[in-house]
Length: 135
Length: 135
Image (cartoon, rainbow over all chains, first blue to last red; front, side, top):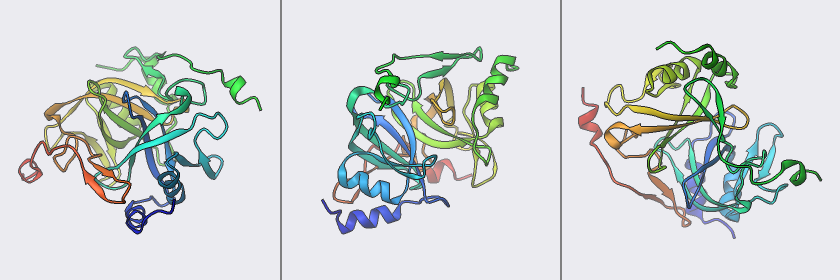
């Protein structure tokens, strides 16, 4: 599906930073869980809108990153929002496989900083990363 | 309240970027609404944990920024999480005044990118910024 002229114009209106990136918060569309946080560049945003599957820019690997390309845990785009300054995106998704984190946890934010200063693991592991990323 | 040695150690374990900043996602602790997105430096994270009120680093003003210092819409810290890479924070808060955005909207993410490419305003304005920021 080719994006409309209006959508192409909208993509241009997003304020990407000096590195050409915009932060993207990924939230479960159903229960509101924050699943992960990553960055998009213009091309990954365009692909996300076109494919309805979430694509990021991997800063460590310096390449486009279709979320779930290795694990199969693709994020289906449900809704997408831009913030007041147009320099951050909120992406609401259906998380296939029910886990977003490469550790096998549902959310990347699986550790709470307790008032004591301890890190407390919350939530449960959905998959075993050793098996999923074995190949 | 002075932070414990364990908490000071934990703050040091957060992976601040080359600019000394870490992204922080702010979510309503009760209904899961994403309220805003901003950055913290080490000092603002320390202050947030100590005061139980959310403090950011304002990149535009280059100063510590107690959220709500002008509007009164302070964010009371309820819970705080670190992600798998320890380079992003999720901050769950009670939002005083029920609005986080300087536009008077409850959330900064008040515009949905529609499949047509239009921006659709969602949610309602809680306060009139002209009145709140008049002084």
